[in-house]
Length: 260
Ligand SMILES: *[C@@H]1O[C@H](CO)[C@@H](O)[C@H](O)[C@H]1NC(C)=O
Ligand SMILES: *[C@@H]1O[C@H](CO)[C@@H](O)[C@H](O)[C@H]1NC(C)=O
Ligand SMILES: *[C@@H]1O[C@H](CO)[C@@H](O)[C@H](O)[C@H]1NC(C)=O
Image (cartoon, rainbow, N blue to C red; front, side):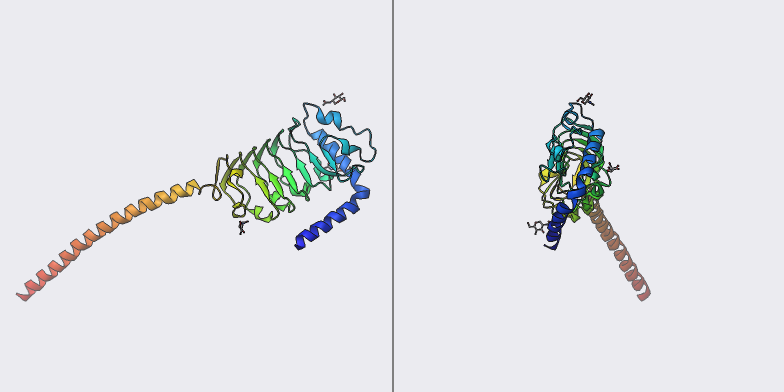
């Protein structure tokens, strides 16, 4: 509750304080994005024209949503399905009041920036699905505390899902389906439905099946050890019986001998 109030207060402050100096940085941000992205169909090249520079001109760019239509301040970047390629776009930290980033269904590749929370600390929605992003999911994503939606479905991401994701308390939509992830699903994500984890290399634990490695291991060990225990018990019993009989007999024998 306190966190949400703080968040609202922050939004209000952001809304008012960035009126004067936000726009220059936002223009810089989009220039940098355009420069760093490979755009074979020329969508950004043809619709992102920076010569105009009237107030709100970037709000008419393809995929750019502004807080107000006549103010050069990016609310969200929706660049889904534009045939874009190359590494994760650069310069996004200059879109200082951005709350949504959608790069879905393109051919972006390479790592997700390890300092992504510093670049976009106030994101509410991050959709990188249906690209070819590779490497590990940066644990730094867990510092993007306002995230409600995180979609990483259908990439080449490997390694484990960071344990720190339990810090993302606002998250309601989450998917890492169809990647190369492995390891145990963090307990904080166990309420997310299984379909959002399927199609990975070796991801396991609730809501998916138990981890097959440990299942095989415990199954193997317990099977072997129970057989071993049974064999040991029988062997011990036989030996004990044999020796006790031998001991008793020899004692009796000795007593008998002594008695005589
Ligand atoms: C971008 O568009 C301009 C004309 O609007 C053209 O001259 C230029 O070659 C284009 N650049 C790319 C990389 O497509
Ligand atoms: C952000 O904008 C400033 C000012 O225009 C520029 O000097 C800086 O290089 C930009 N940062 C990035 C990461 O593009
Ligand atoms: C999962 O959901 C149950 C009830 O639906 C809730 O009590 C529990 O706290 C949730 N667990 C997590 C880790 O979100």
